[in-house]
View 1 (cartoon, rainbow, N blue to C red):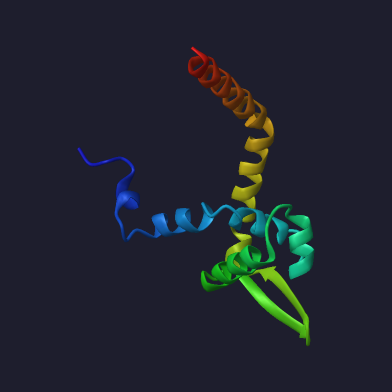
View 2 (tube, rainbow, N blue to C red):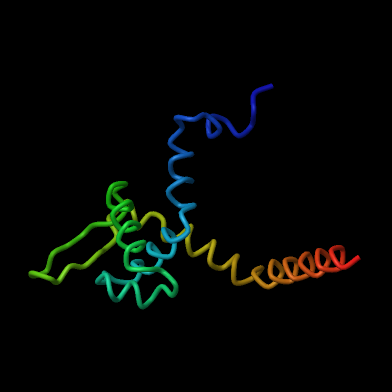
Length: 125
């Protein structure tokens, strides 16, 4: 019987590349941050708490290399980033993931806290 997941498990499958791109810690947040409007680097950095300027730059470059984000020069020193047509195709899946996180994030936190408490209890014995 063939694996129902199909070729997604093959090393050269485009599905794996897409998952790899989107599993980057900051990629989905950058894409979501650009979903409503083009933004400048500093604006994105302020919007996305905890990301360093260096990592934001690396993330934007990587998303550009994959054709998801476009770097648009308005004037010298005025650069905006915006989603490409391909990047915009990810907005709906990201919104679904965001809704799932909003609905179930509390359960994940509760589970983590219970697991940490159990680990502390086991270590104290």
